[in-house]
Each structure stands twice: as C-alpha cells, then as structure tokens.
Image 1: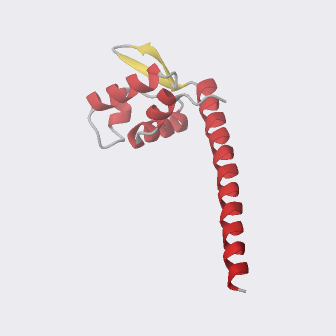
Image 2: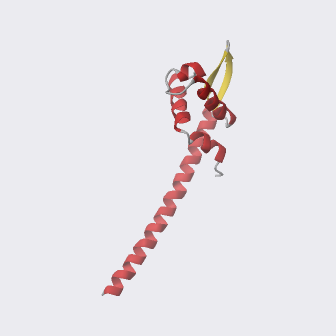
Image 3: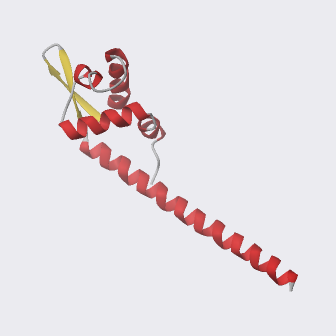
Length: 113
C-alpha cells in the first residue's frame, strides 16, 4: 500500500487529531463549535479544517453562515488501512533487527567459550 504523505501530515498535528475525535463523537461540527471546545482560536480551527478538507478527511456543507464539517468515513478507513500497513512493515523490520542482534550475541557468546 502506498502511504499518502499529505494525509499523514494532516493527521500528524495533535489539534487536528483532537478535532477529528470531536467530529466523530458529535457527528458534525463547525469552526465555532470546535473552537469552543479546543484551546485555539476559531480562525486557527478554520485553517485546520481546511487542511483536513484538502486531504479528504472531512467534508463540508453549508449551514447558514457557517460550514458544517463531518468526517469522511471512507477516507478515514483509508488512513486506518495505511497505518495498519505501516505498522505491519515496521513489525517485520523489528523482527529482522531482533534476529540480527540475537545472532550477533550468539557469536559473541561462542567466542567467549
């Protein structure tokens, strides 16, 4: 699986991850409702939402003078699949490193005998 760097850059920010958590819990939200629950300005929230929208993690609809945001379930599932794939690849790398380290340790132990 190809990893989408823009997607992971967007998710890498802790404020955006918290925003996604809130949107998932509440079903939807606006920059105003999110800023009331986070320690950042409404303008900063709007910029974070623009980043999440650009990578497809949220979708906006007009709600009066504001835009209402919802998490895009398909894109979130894609992100989860990428994370799982990356995790599996790193698990395999770590197993290989462990085998190499164990082999080196066995050689050192054999030389001491």
